[in-house]
Amino acid sequence: MTKPPQPPAAPVGSLVSPAGMGGIVAGKGFDFQTRYVVCHLPLWLQDKEFHQIFSEGAGDIDIRYLQDGPSARKHIQIKDHEVSPAEFKDVVETFRGFDASMPGVYQGFGLACPALSAQLRPIESGLGRLRGATPFYDDTSSALSATKADVDDRMRKHGLSDDQIQFIHDKVALEVGHGDLSHDDRAVELFIARLLSHPGFAGKQRAMVQPAYAELLRLVTASKGTVLDKASIEDVLHATVLADISREAAVTVWILNWTKEAFEPPADYNVDWTAHFDRTTRRVPSPEVWNGTLVPQLDTLRKTIVTTGAARTIQLRGKCALSTGIALGATFPAVGDWVFEIPQPPAKECWRSDATPSQDFSLQVEIVEADQDGADLVVGLNIRGDGRQDIISFVEASGAAPNAFVFMSPPSQGAQSIGGDADAVAMARAVRERLGEMLKARRLQMTRLFYFGPFALSVLLGQQLTSIGRVQLFEYQDPGYVPSCLLRT
Image (cartoon, rainbow, N blue to C red):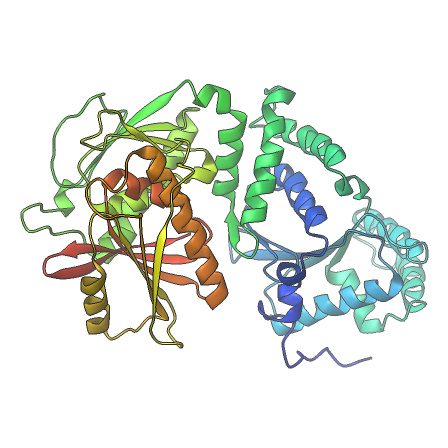
């Protein structure tokens, strides 16, 4: 018997090891892998215990299930080619490395590929026969001993040790026959068939579910290296499949912060937070109230709207803090096909988040380096004026130096610096793109965000803040700032 594998100097189980970063760095097999995930989502979503996927987090795909007790996780290595005996052995050893480095974390491992090489097919057929017969002979352990011995001999012929063989029996599943996933035209047909078998979409027509394939490809691509949860996937599915209906319907949401008053049109949903705000003193809720009460209420609102109807356009009314706007937009993101219609005086027409962005918008960016060991970026969005000195003074007084200060603004600052929703959409997208680039380049996952601009733009900005890690928002409270909510994007 060989010794259990020892974690190498850069542990296989580390999410920043070469194995854990392989797909992100090299992108090998990425298209095939993305198709695999998208075509399996209709199946995974039907499992009530399915909770999250982590694409490229620890090699290829991790799936998390929430059971009555602790979570269960499965790790799947996806290959876009026929797997040879040497590669098969390497994959098994990689699985054992993960298992040794993170004991008890993964309950199962899988190898998914178009085919195994001709030399390995006797192993594939033998394991399939053995596992298929096991439930029938579960009360007599000796019935399949000869079959198991034969399968073990087939694996030994390819240099697999007894420890590796037992690990395969205990934890490794083989998923072969995925050749169609090398081609989008075949993969989309598989996706449509599987989605139409999902109870939530069984009554839909083919033309309604087909667009969801491209949208999920985009979502999975954008989520590489980050956790993607079941609710986000279902949001995109519902938004895409019900898009034609959504464009014809809208819901009106009132969010009340500073004042309790009536608006037009009447509210379908009235979220009254006035007890937590005081306009005279500019008092805003504590971070504990924001994170423990208010933001979860927004999440509940989103789920309610999704459950009760197909509308994806929100007519937003209310006088709110800027943090409320950003948090609201982040809860109803653009990637989920949510559209906001928001009054923004003195404009006569409401600003819409689906406006065509200005083509000539130019985002101004200034970077002030701080502490190279700092764990986050401090980002100031200066639209209505220059808040640089106030932000720097406040952060320096806090004693937590950032990696850098980043100040972004439109070409000019002031009350009219954003000419309308076209400029607002352009700026929101440009901020997300530039911020994402800087966080990735500096290997950071945390942003402290200070926003000084129109409320409608704060909502549109929140809609774009996806897959950039944690974002701590701040509210101005003369003579300084106070933390509000923490967004986990």
